[in-house]
Length: 379
Image 1 (cartoon, helix red, strand yellow):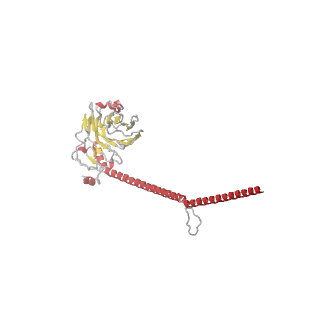
Image 2 (tube, rainbow, N blue to C red):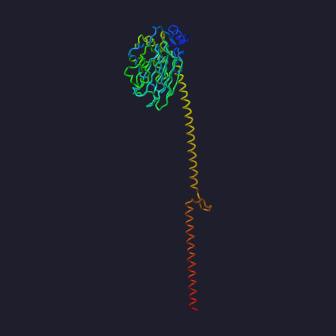
Image 3 (cartoon, rainbow, N blue to C red):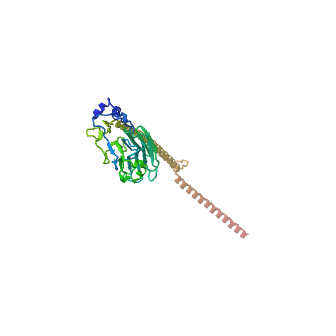
């Protein structure tokens, strides 16, 4: 199948595929996905039954329950819809009625997005797109992209972005996130925080239309097709062209359903891998820069240590400076300690000599005094 896709790529692309469908069914062009346009997707056209999608019947309780969406910091979710209704709820999820919610709806023919993901604060983001005629019965593509605190709504080729500031920019915690609901919500959800934010014209109108190509980008570049877990007031037969048994797209080439054909979106993997390569290259550059910085820091630290050691050695030499006395025959230079001992000896000797001199002087004085006394007595 991969070889067939690659061979077919030379002669036909999604543009031709879209032209055929628009001529037959007056379909609008499929819209841009993250990083590239579906206009460049390479297709393998197969002969399949006509128009297949989830069909919502507008009954009292109408919805399609889909698996949980990992609404991480950079997640994306997208789907196609068509209807003649001016007001209808198209997509809904919340965090089990705490404070976070995400909902997309048609109101007066415009697409409206309401999202709140700032913990314990009312910092909801509201975005609307359209010229009031998105309920024209033609296919339209809706895409919701998240990049941390920034939320972007894309409808066909028009997009709007808004930022909600807050400490918590994760829309859902793993233990509280809810399932995704398309085309409506269960009646038990009508009291939820998110549902109460919806205009009555939207909440009280049951969706009568079709939805297809529900794609989850769960923190990855490559999307995953999502299938309904439960249907109420809706049906999934005949199946989408991508869900038919004879569809065989490569694993890394997501399938895009059309009315009379499907497209194997093989180009996205090239864009993803290219992005991965660029990211890897950027990581290498950062790693190299970090290594260089670390090496420079290490070198500086080593030099500092060397200088410190050198200064320490100089101080040591200064403190252990050797005291020297004039050289004499058979006498070596003396250290400070030995010189100190010699000085003490000299001082002691001098003191003894002085003491002897004093004693001698005293003796002489005494003798003189005695002699004088004797002479005086005799006279």
